[in-house]
Length: 379
Image (tube, rainbow, N blue to C red; front, side, top):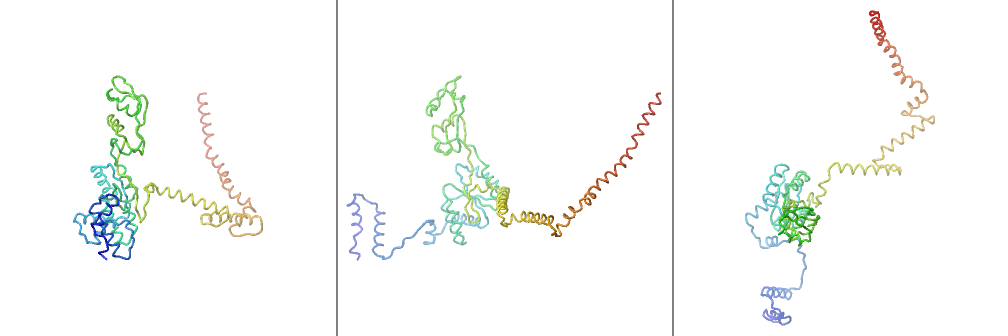
């Protein structure tokens, strides 16, 4: 069978003879290996290798031993996964080491949170191994979020407080060519303080200028950058010459991982008052529907009971039917003077107290007598 197969040298000449292209020795060896497997095996299984890294394959197949530094990093990450309920995935683009140091110190002091940065391949490998070890496949969702320049923040505290600390520590920075603008950047009309020799920068951007008192002056306001678009080299140079630093960089929370679910950071802005308000509005709507249809839903039951009691009381007053709660009302209707007397008794008491008050006010005539006596003395 081996003799019936073309030799390696013959196979290496086939692509060259057909297309004139010469393949590398590595590709020719791979082709020879594949053809050998096809010839010597009857069955082929097609497998999916999604979310399987080369490090995991190496460890499972060859028993690779990692360095002490990597083992310590893996032990630290597994400890953080085991001891913390919440994980915030943060973006660290354009964040310097000093800025990161200040954020770490504030997190450890105020809310007891830990930031972990590292290579995405290593972090993914450790998280997937932890998920396989614990049997909790939800951690694979966290591993899928480790892309580009991101880090992980582990905490058991209130995530909204952690997010506030992460995003409030920002550093003002100048616009760099190719960077994505965070906001719209405009130059107002007026003097720029630049010499007339710098007019070429404004002309390249199509900005109308004039020379006033030996300096360049912008005639009308112009927008240089739009939010979400890349900053051009001319715009970056012009903003740098004018000393404008329009952007502020800091850590940004991209996703939140908690209880096996991946959530948007917008949920951290929801307060208990917002939840109570929404629930109250929903309960009110359910109660209104129950009252309108007569269906005894739980929120409408107190209102239905009050309405039913009013109807029973109306029937008892209109007929001879009576019950304990209606007896007093019927007695009030039958003997209004009785309750008016007791109610008016207080008023009568007030009326009886009027003479006493008049008696207490008796000294007034004495004042008049004193006045009279005063006048008689002058007489």
